[in-house]
Picture 1 (cartoon, helix red, strand yellow):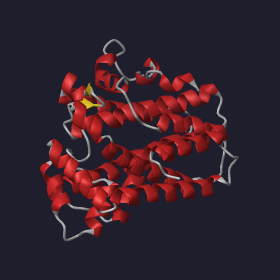
Picture 2: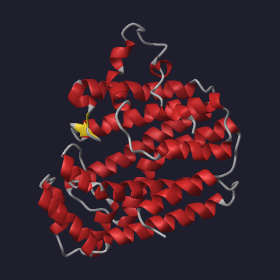
Picture 3: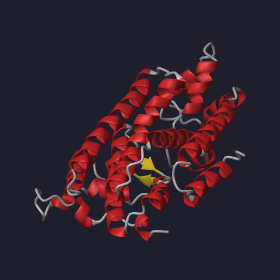
Picture 4: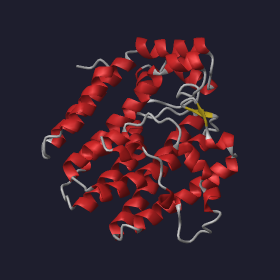
Length: 314
């Protein structure tokens, strides 16, 4: 495994040629803090699997990884700020350690650093990809926030489209940058969208099934206590429109153990968890169909096998 994937963001990535070199570290302390927190993202493994196709040399792969890690840390910091989260995976968030203002300013600053790192690639297409990423990501998070704050349940189609924007924005820019640096010109739009939908829905499912750890440790947040809609929740509410229990539970943003357990039982009763697993299986098959145009990739195959094994999907 490429060890770079597990390293911290390198100092030069957080350095702008336009900033005061002596004080610049003060501007990124919140992002650095977030980058060092435990992360359950599948993205690092996905990047390594993708490089089986693109075959980027280490120096070019480093550039993509550095940009990805900066995007990931900035994204997570913005999410923690927007949700006023005090913990992420059991560790104190940047906005709780430093301040809300510092975390917010660091996030804005690093958005421009991302564009600066893209400009360093000396290809206008890279900067264009960055603009597309920021627009798509903002659209996705904006829709998710709107539905949460107004307790409006989207349709399944609307929710999937949101996930393609939100989660897909990161996967899209990574794949496009790897293509740009490798010269690979194959159209991977359908594969990118299938991967985006798969990993977004997978994250939703895993978040709900991490409830046992949450209930035992009380040191994290989850979609139910945040009042967020998830794919299983959307399916349950849309298939049982006359049952308002789930909407009422989300409205409360509860942290009560018994109510959270009851919510999970409703999702199971309405068949939404099994339905989600079937959708994941379908998306995996769609992705595999698209991958046939590429060289057979044992790393990508293993990612899907490991995930489906954990979810007990044949």
